[in-house]
Image (cartoon, rainbow, N blue to C red):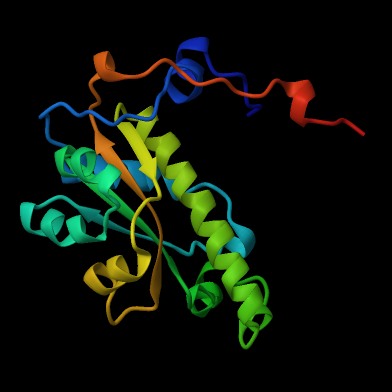
Length: 197
């Protein structure tokens, strides 16, 4: 089966009309939709199928209160109001799973003892997976508000203690209030940033 182009309506929902939201409706986000988003996003490619992304979905009032001291001041209000905040993290021992995830080669040996390669792979591929997650969330009708602006060490202590995971970035999830969006900021044109050689 040959792939064909998606409809304009789909590309608008995923890209051209999708926005980063900071104001949220009171509408809840179910655990089921979060699982559906992950089950779609997990098929995006990573190096040697390494899949280093780990996600903590921060939903409860108690969990949000644990997150609050980790946030920079400008991110507190919108994050407390969001139905869910995803803490995207990376497993720094992702390579231990490669015998299962990439059985066609001894990929684990590429990483063991190579701290630079581990750090590069964990960061690059967890970030890719988090981006796939955002696109999948948009595809299933959720709005997203990805952000930095938090103390990673505090977040690791609050949510990832006694694991091999480290924080990457946060993303608020829910159903955004479109009326509170700012005008879209400009983007570069193709000729400004691209070369065909």
